[in-house]
Image (cartoon, rainbow, N blue to C red; front, side, top):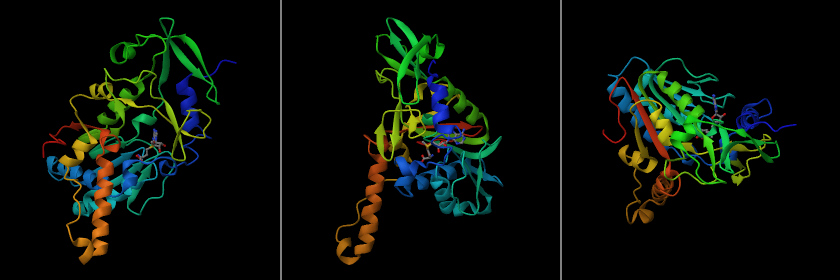
Length: 319
Ligand SMILES: C[S@@+](CC[C@H](N)C(=O)[O-])C[C@H]1O[C@@H](n2cnc3c(N)ncnc32)[C@H](O)[C@@H]1O
């Protein structure tokens, strides 16, 4: 029997009844994302939310929607840090399986119809399945896969997306066709009636695409071959230039730049503090270490922040 194509196998492996996320696997069990480092990412999101709030002239209801919320850590932290918005703030985690959330944070398995405020998709786009193709003897062929990860080449593929964003010119080159992600992002942005949508993820751009594609697996903190058997997360980097073009004028910066613009900077504790206030020094040094991790250009700091404002001028780099 022919193997399924990658999107079918990927979807079943993550989101099917026995899939990795549908069974309740939490990112925190398998890999480290920025919300899991500490509260500093949520502090930056609250600062951005404040800019959205001002741009919308402090609406009666201010939404913060965390799409693909995983274990709910970011939503819970923003809720805890968002007291300044008073009763106007509504925080919602959108996730397939309800994560543990504090009272006051809503959950839904469905995307909201209409948002006034900020939608954030943190490491969501990379988890959306897409077709995988390989150039073989001058032709672009779809890659099929068995549940143990064994691959075979299927029919020839013609894709305008590939022609525009990721043309394959050498035999052996592979790509993930990002059109479902572009469509998902455009759909999410369109749900923002007023405010902004923010995608944060790892990705690549034309001119620097990975030769063999970026499809991979993660299990228990390790990168593993992407066998679509439900035992590991399956992910591929996001073609950010394509996603950015799908939703009108947007701002695209690195996480390092975004955090600096939102006031999150690592500052070593004052000299001599360790002698006067050892616990204060420890807290300051820990915070500086967490921020350094979030800003590391070779790690989380190299992630991309794509901000798409809707009906109001909202910017990451212009306060
Ligand atoms: C890589 S995890 C990121 C989790 C979290 N945002 C973080 O950064 O720690 C992607 C999450 O998106 C969720 N997800 C994917 N598609 C979804 C959908 N259509 N609706 C809700 N959640 C979805 C998955 O279940 C998974 O928990």
